Amino acid sequence: MKALIPTGILGLMTLMASAQSPKPEAPPTGALEKIAEALPDKPFAKPAKPRKVLVFSKTNGFRHGSIATGKSALTEMGKKTGAFETVISDDLANFETDKLKGFDAVCFLSTTMNVFAPHKDELAKMSDADKEVAVKNEERYKKNLMAFVKSGRGFIGIHAATDTCYEWPEYGSMINGYFDGHPWGANQKVSVKVEPGQEKHPLVAMFEGQNVEFPEEIYQLKAPYDSKAVHMLLRLDTEKTDMTVKGIKRTDGDFGIAWARHWEKGRVFYCSLGHNHEIYWDPKVVRHYLAGIQWALGDYKVEVKDAAPTR
Image 1 (cartoon, rainbow, N blue to C red):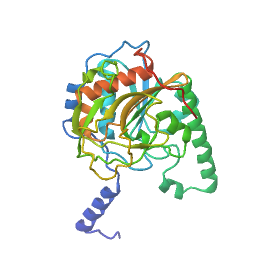
Image 2 (cartoon, helix red, strand yellow):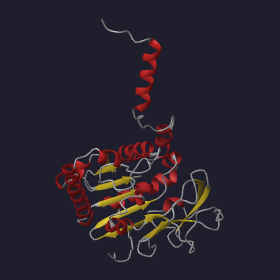
Image 3 (tube, rainbow, N blue to C red):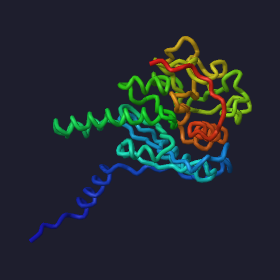
Image 4 (cartoon, one colour):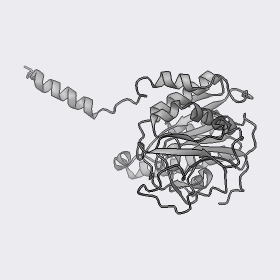
């Protein structure tokens, strides 16, 4: 005869099981409507061919709550404008050479730490043989991604893409620096300006030379960050932003926010905005994303001047 479990205990067990299950990621209520309203109707340039972008958001460190909002914004951006199709996936198999060939660009959306290695919890359960396989896979995926970009494809980094792959110097050189703290937190109002002299550049023309101000987490970057090595597009306006906040390490006032660069035959676009959900329905910011993505895809033929990469 089976023992009966009291309904109270059964309910508690169900609650505990539910609490242990990861919560599905989703944008906040009303976000999709706001994103749809903010997005432009047309692309900046007609795609030369159907474009496909891999949106990858694996995290082995902090995971941003806005990732789901970013995924929705990028997906709807591609659909509404016809500029590209997104494939939302954290499957590392996409970094095998034969799979990468199917994409025109890869977007790292708030990735963190070594995304090509197993998570530490997963690693703790692996045998020595499995760990050896994981190391070989990691090396291959990194080599494949770098070859993909250098061959003439695109790489797009959003927000925490600079908080990624510290152990891979060539990645840091490609994206132009690593995260070194965010003195300005998510609730801190900041002022973002267009790089002086770039007011009419197509990748930032949507700002019309005017600052945008909103609460947002702003990064400071460390080596190999070099604002002179890239085509700088947006910066923190230190004259209109509180510079008395704690945690500022840079003494040169050089807080780049968005830039573009060539990487051999490839194109790299990075923007550190994207911590807060609201960024993904700011009309000027999403147009900036679209312009940068279309440039990285090779469709928006605009001039980008950058220094020859040193590595």
